[in-house]
Amino acid sequence: MEAVIFFVGAAAALAGALGVIAARNPVHSALFLLMTLVSMSVFFLLLEADLVAIIQIVVYASAIVVLFIFVITLLGVDEKEARIEPLRFQRPLAIGFGALLFAQIVVIAGNDWATGQRSVVGPLDDDERSGNVRRVAETLFTEYIWAFEITAVLLVIAVVGGVILARRSGHRPSAEASNA
Amino acid sequence: MPEIEIPEITASYYLILAALLFTIGAVGLLLRRNTLVMFMCIELMLNAANLTFVTFAKELDDIGGQVIVFFTLVVAAAEVAVGLAIIVAIFRRRPDVTADDINLLKG
Image 1 (tube, rainbow over the protein chains, first blue to last red):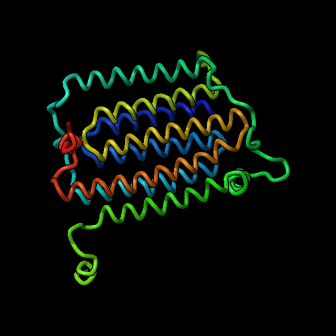
Image 2 (image 1 turned 120 degrees about the vertical axis):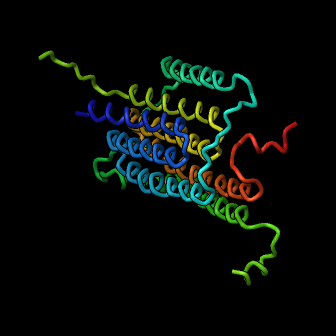
Image 3 (image 1 turned 180 degrees about the horizontal axis):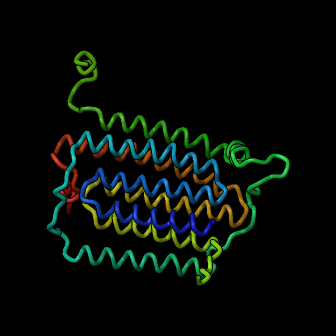
């Protein structure tokens, strides 16, 4: 049963990924991306990462894809992507480099270079305090509390930076406030 | 009816799938010129990395792999917020969002 789910999910994920780079229309790309992201959430469920699977749907599939579609509607659909290539041979070279990259990843993984130590941070499931959400929360708020606080700062900086970048420049803030 | 052998899904299957998705994202980043689609390709690559993390979390029985996914998610969200703001800011100055047109710094 797990094999069936895996292969159906893998087909959907790969089809979605190829659709993202093949679709002419950016809206279609965004919808193909959504297909891949939902399939990923199925894999996370298969790998016993319940909380990550739900967060994947909530954050990626809703928030990030909606943000993409929002910006596409704001900017207008631009289908006339350049057919002329400023760099000659860019397409074949890109596909060649892609094949090379894939071969490198497989060789590295196949040579056991990426070995790991078992259970450095803590086991997936604890007998006394079981439950994936509880285990993730405990680790996040004990072992990784410092990193967690830093991500809060990172998000604030990103949001403030986004607001400043997207604000219409050339106006004084007071003039803008009175116009609005 | 011939018996179909159903393979057991090991970590290698997930890792190969993650490698394929990462490669597709990287190739897309090189092939496409539309900056929005390039961003989606970066999201694909980040997702492939997340799949690797979760696979190793299961394989090595380590909760750390799942916790790291949250930090990747935060970085992805911050990247999308700033990146889309940059695209909107560029769009104000010129009418389309093709990467080839943004060449003012070309040497």
